[in-house]
Length: 149
Image (cartoon, rainbow, N blue to C red; front, side):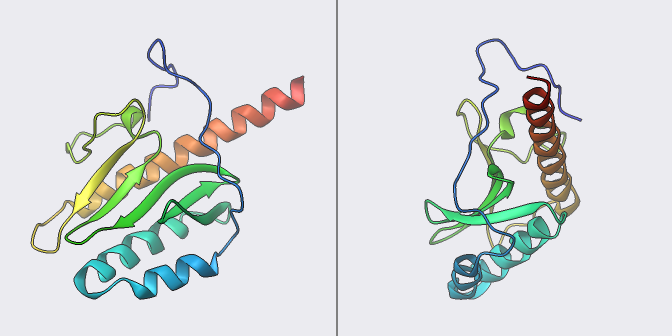
């Protein structure tokens, strides 16, 4: 489980995107349009993300299939010419014992997936599940704070 205490200087503000829905037809179209092995990879991982729970919402954001709890983004899948990224909006705070996450930003991290390179599927799924659980907790905490106020 991620540490609920953030390192000093980090914002607790969630990254919010408008327009998230249960199933976004634009994402289905985008997933179908991804060619070859990269398309297979992108579809595989986004389907697993969207099936995490009934509370998962989705939206195309900056050309990326983005998964949210409500409007709070927690993961995305992005396809490029030679690889697919499975990324996490609070990835810097996720436990990553397999060392899959790359990136040096304040919050975001991603796993780079390439057709010719194996990835530890169970470790990636653990990251996805941790990001989902973390965002559920964060959204729930925000809702509780609003209800108390």
